[in-house]
Image (cartoon, rainbow, N blue to C red; front, side):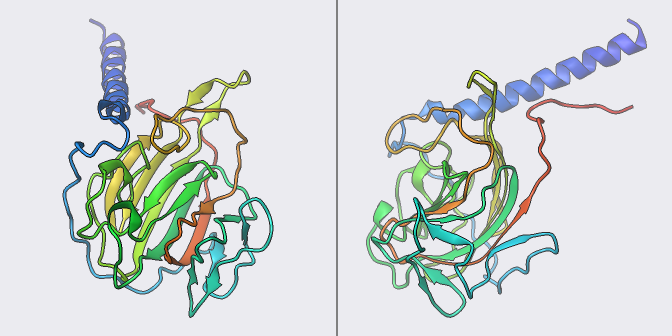
Length: 267
């Protein structure tokens, strides 16, 4: 076999392995019924202690600095009805979810959140909220500290699809961080899906999703599917009725890319 043929064969085999590995990982969400209580829970990993707010980098768009909701509105229109406190904003149940006035596609996002203390309720009724990327793909916010619920609905889950690799929740009332990279889905001109949306997420510094594909738009209690939508949409923070707190929210817009599961070798 010639050297270049051998190299091409190696690249093809490696690429196939990567693609198959990613496909298997992405299909794992289909191994269990949505919200199955039989699905194994992620292992508990205790993160380091909470620190102060993480300062944004110089090229970040600051969406909430603790002083103003100028970047936000009620989802669907109108003023944001949440309560500004001492450096944070708190959900006011029944006022509605809030959305950014700006729209985003591929992003790096940082946000900090805390569930109520003392904790009340259990399961999905304990410190429940969420962040919806592109108003469509939810990352669950929940008090999962000693609180059992279905695996695909605990804190940091890609809701209804993928549980996190670890339960890295801090105790109620402690500040927690989400640091994520999100790649929006790509659609063909006819509306068919070309590439799924993908997420890499660190919860309190612990990697819990590693370039994992959403199986579709977030829905409750049934399998997700994709429908074509705009390339840029607002971020949404959910009003689920619980007085969850948020602070220090910033985003970096990322260069558009069509990279998905292709492995590239350079000589």
